[in-house]
Image (cartoon, rainbow, N blue to C red):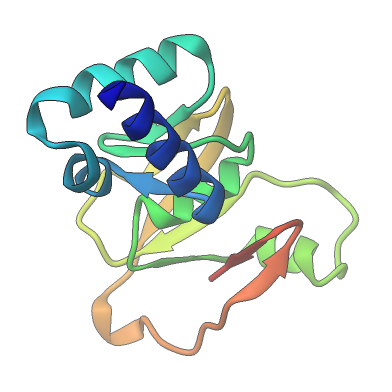
Length: 135
């Protein structure tokens, strides 16, 4: 009985938020059962892994921007979003984290990650892309 209660709460959490981190799941479920619950949901295909400790139920690779937060989607992706360019591009994520630059494979598609200094990180806003508000 207790496991079904946790499962309903976790599914409700994934309905409310496009990206859920493992810490949020652990707060709801507890430390012992959280890993097993996430593993079972992942094996069933109900959730997908964005990165270490970050999961989503949507098949949208631009949600990876929340994994690299503080970050925003920029460069060619922004040009395509504003319909200034008709070609489809790789999502480009600009972050201040010290992470490896280059192309990453997330949700069976590629994204491009770039680093910038914190003093150049300003002037972005959240815009709606499909059903999500992305920076």
